[in-house]
Every structure is written in structure tokens, then in C-alpha cells.
Image (tube, rainbow, N blue to C red; front, side, top):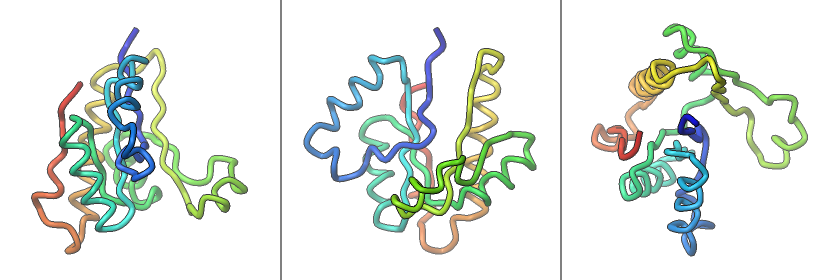
Length: 143
């Protein structure tokens, strides 16, 4: 069975502080080789990158899902961006939109690599002046 990638996690959230090692251990035992932990503002993004480096995860700066989907579309990578028929949940969580990359049997490693390249390009486009260059280096511990 191919290894899985969780494309939107918040493993850096303080709610995981007490048992983050166990959570990530269970994730990897369940064939999820890696995850992208997503920062939402400057301090949250800095925490996401620190946790990502410690655990060999990917981290992403907060980029609006519609902007991300536009950049990825230019690279021929298709994702879903929006509310995904979950408007009540989105309102409750205070989230305007999410981005979702889906993989199936016909996807291969080249598709995952294209997604990662596209996300890195989107970070370059939308990083702005709030983040330092060293905070934008992806953590690539597992594959």
C-alpha cells in the first residue's frame, strides 16, 4: 500500500503538546508517512515550522486556499478550494475556506512531487514581508 500524506494538519497546535509524540507515532503507524502542519498567522506559522523541523514534517505558511488553488492550477495541479459543502462546520470553526488535495490509485509519486513544488512556489509568491526567508524552508524529514 502506498504511503499517505495528510495535506492539512495542525499538529503544532498547543492541544497536542501533552501527547504529540504519541499522535505522530500513531499517524505513521497508520501508513501516513508525513503531514503538512499549517500556520495561520505569523506566530502560529513560526510554531508550525519549529514542530515540523522537530518531527520531520512539512509546514506551510497561511495562504488563502483560493490563492493556492490558482497558483497550483497554473502548474497543472488540481486541488479543491472552498467550503466543500460544509458551510455550517466552516462557520462554526471560523474558517472561510480550506484547500484539499485528493489522491487515488492512479496518482503516483510524480503527482505528489508536483503538489509539493506548487505549494513551495505558492509560498514564494504569497509569503510577503511578515516571514523571514529562513522560515520558508520546508522540512523534508520523511517521504
